[in-house]
Length: 393
Image (cartoon, rainbow, N blue to C red; front, top):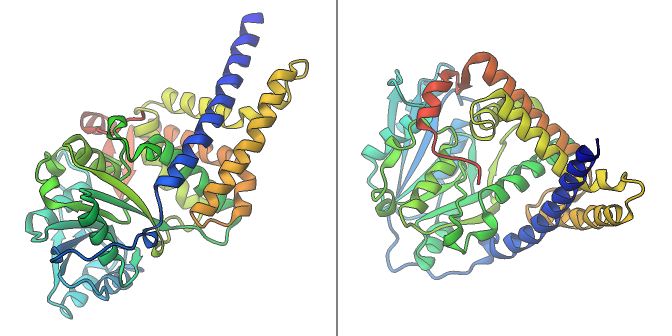
C-alpha cells in the first residue's frame, strides 16, 4: 500500500510538471507561430504555379461552394484537380458540372480502391501524377479560403524558403462544450507534433494540416511520395513528417478568418472522426494500449486538481494550485491565440474527460471490428500496422 501511495504521488508530481512545462512550451509556440496576416512579405519576382488538389468522398453538401471559393482566388496561376473518390451521393455529378464552367479544373473519378491503399492517400497520389504546379496545395471538399490566402501563403513560402506550410483553420462554433473539446485536441496536437519547436529542426517538428497543406513540388519529389504513406491514417501530418525527414523546411501559421472549415459539426461526429487516431496512433492497434494511454493522459490532465485533494501534503497541494492557475492562464491564452471563445477554456477538465473518453471509444471499436472504418471503407489492423508511419513522440 505504501508503494502504491508513492507511485500515485510520483504520478501527480509528474502530471503537474507536465502542465508547467507544457504551458511554457505553449507560450513559446504562440510566440513563434503567428497568424498569416501578421506577415507583410514582398511578392516573389514570378508567381509559381499552384496545383490545388481536393479529394472528395460524399461531400455533395459542401463541394460546390468549396470549389468556388478557390476559383475566386486572386492568385494569378493555378489549377484545381478534384478527385472523386468513390462517391455515391451526387458528388460526382456536381464536380462534373462545375468543371464545365472553368477550364482550370481537372477531374479524376476513382471507382475502385487498389489493395494495400487507404482511400485518401490513393486519391491524392493520382492527382499528383497529373499536377503541373510548382506547389501542391492539398485541401478538402469542405474548406473555404479567402480570396488572397494563396498569395499570402506562397509569398510566405518563397520569402522564407519553406517547403511545407500547414495553415490552421477557424474551426470553432457557438457550442461551448464542442469548443472546449476542440481546444483540448489542438492543445495536445501542437504539443505532440512539437509545434513549439517549429524553428528547431533538431527536434523534428511537423504539423501537416489537412485543410491547407501547401508543399513545394521539388521537396515532395525528393521523398518516396504517397507510396510511403499509402496506409497512414494521419496522412496530413504524415506528409509534413515525410517532407521534414527528407530535409525540407516545414512551418505552421494560423489562417483564422482566411480559412474556415466545419471540422466536426457535433461531438458525436467528432467521436467518429477520432476513431482513426485513437486506435492507430495512440493505442498502436490494441485495446489495452488505447485504454492505458487514455487513463494515463486523463490522470496527467487532471493532476493539478487531484493534487489539491492530497490532504497532509501541503507541498503537493501548493504545486497543484500553482498549476491550476498557471494551466488556466495557458489554456485561456491558447484560446485567445486561436480565436476560440475564451470561456470555453474554463471548462478544460470537462474537455479532457470527453476527449479522452473518445480515445477509449475508438480503441474499443477498433478492437471489436479488427480494424478501422474510414471514409466508408473498412481497413484491417494488419494492413494498417504494416504501413504505419506516424507515432507519438
